[in-house]
Image (tube, rainbow, N blue to C red; front, side):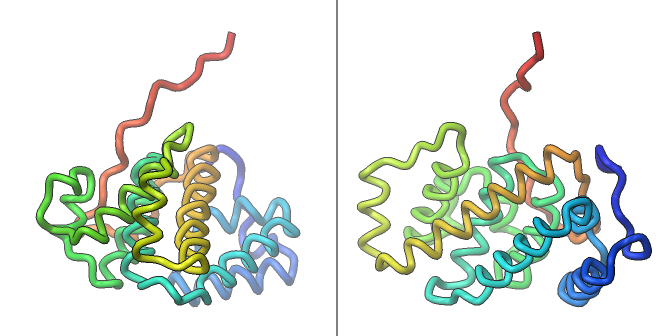
Length: 195
């Protein structure tokens, strides 16, 4: 249950119903973020277009992008995002052993040096505040051109936006990884108490 009432596809405007159908075709089910964004249809449309534009970029290996997104979901501590990201990761060829090793990727032999570098970047971008150093970015430049760096940075930033939006509305896992290994959301810092 989310913190606000979802707009169901039956209650939605024709355009939002279309977006529900497109999402259902892509994901196989209705998901809470659509029902929340449906409260602000223009934002839903803009968000959907941004997701589609991001999905069409293909200069960075898909597996690397999925690893980065999955790590970002875990660092930001979004259980809904960890659930769906783990399912997408399996489809991209990431093994269950690698999903289990993700919290300790630097100590694991499951990841290549390039994968570890991308995971370092996803981790650094997903911390608050971000901790991307000049050294880390220089190391990335050895493997990626500027267009690829924009693409990789965009997918990590987009996952951060998804994770923070979904977490703020307290979206729970949707069962994408039910019965399978799911990456674990990493420990979140203490919540800020209101005075």
